[in-house]
Every structure is written in C-alpha cells, then in structure tokens.
Amino acid sequence: MSKAKRRKPMSEINVVPYIDVMLVLLVIFMVTAPLMTQGIRVDLPQSSSEPIDVDADEIILVVSVKSDETYFINIGDKERSISLASIGEQAEKIIKANPTVKVFVEGDKSLAYSVIINLMNVLQVAGATNVNLITAPSA
Image (tube, rainbow, N blue to C red; front, side):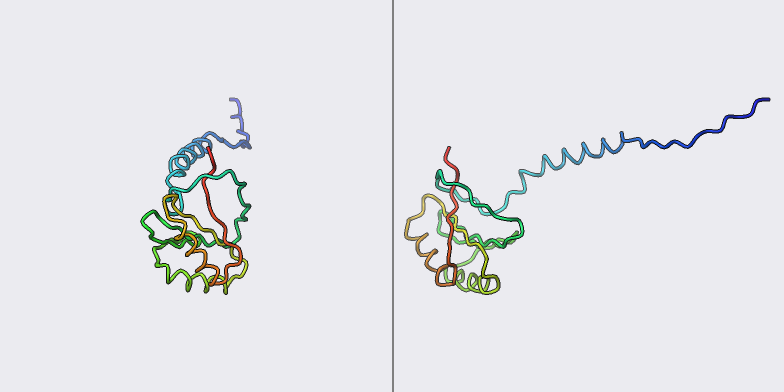
C-alpha cells in the first residue's frame, strides 16, 4: 500500500469573501452619503469668490438665517433654533472658550440686507473679530 500524501498547509488567503464585503460596504456608503447633509437648508446667494480653507480640527460656528427670519446656530454636528437675542450670549460663551473659532453666517438670498447686518453686529459685540459670509458657487 502506498503512503497517503501529506497535505501541505495552505499559506494563501482567500480574498473573495473580503471583496464581497467591501463591495457591500461601498454600496451602503454610496447610498447613505447624500443623506448625510449637514446644516439648515438655506437658498444662498451666488458668488464667484474662492472657498475658505478650514481644517478638520478647527472649531466652526455657523449661524444660519432662513427666509422666514428664523435663526439657527450650528456648532459641529449640533444645530438648533435660537432667537437673535440668544445668539449673542451663546456666541460670546463659545468665543471666550475658544478665541480662534471661525464664525460663518449663511443667510437666504431673499432676506433683507438689514437682517444679516443686525446678525453680524450681534456677533461682533459677542467678540467675533472676523465674520465670514457663506455663498453658493456661481454657475
């Protein structure tokens, strides 16, 4: 009788199941990415200005004004409705805690100019030295 051949240990990794898992994850991320928009829906005015570079680790304070003059404050991933009187208090606390915070204002293009100016005045009184306006890129 012949001796049974000993099997050598297989030193290769079967990557086919890993490819299947990666393709499923890719499809999940492609479907959910458009749903993860942040911020308040505001119809921004268009401008041909250059984008501002913002690092991922910088603290950003975004104040949004909708067309019905409701104010929203957005810090990181938290956004909430707030009155104009409360914006100054909240912004002052945030700026005192982190003086390098970048302040951005986004307002609906149908708003009166005075609404945005009043908001910028409140932010400057709160200690914001450089208030940036957010616009949509021109088509």
